[in-house]
Image 1 (cartoon, one colour):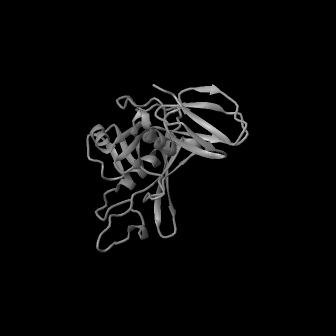
Image 2 (image 1 turned 90 degrees about the vertical axis):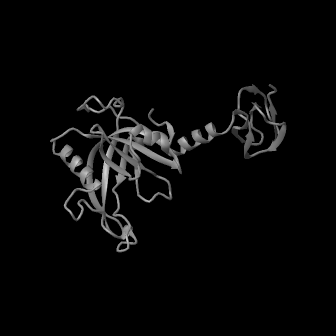
Image 3 (image 1 turned 45 degrees about the vertical axis):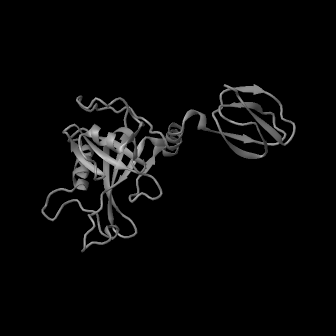
Length: 244
């Protein structure tokens, strides 16, 4: 199921709880869950590194309140005023115990927000490190997680040696999602055409015969099915539909 696009309802049903907070430590005593986003409008500075194998996840802010109208100006907390660990504190303690060799890595299932109500299951990661750093205004927690392969069976203990894995870039997931949302005859195909270039003749579903001028990127209703060799010696290029 890794890298599948799922709805928020499906995600909550799978985990057996309503996922409101971004950090959820020790869900069902088998794994933890975090919600991430790398969208420009995301409230936290999560980032993917090392070619898609590593996630650097930013910790959780203090809740907004009348006495704290802007949590982005306040330090992220490790403990509550009662002395109990926050989610930051729980993840931080687990990561530091891994570094000290006192436990195996915490397994973390990561869901990435693609758009409102739409998420991607980014699979299982190992929590391997954590630290604090200062941004422009306050102290924040950072967590390093490494994507691992073949650990969806959470009933088995985490292996000591990890099999690394790469996650699919967000932009690719968006393209796949858009393609699935549109009926087959309304899917779009992109042709990059240049004048006086040897090009194939493209056959489309649902496209009307149209003549375009290059160089330009042409977005036309339909999906490219087959190519028939032809040479275009002028700036006028014709895209002919495939009759079905």
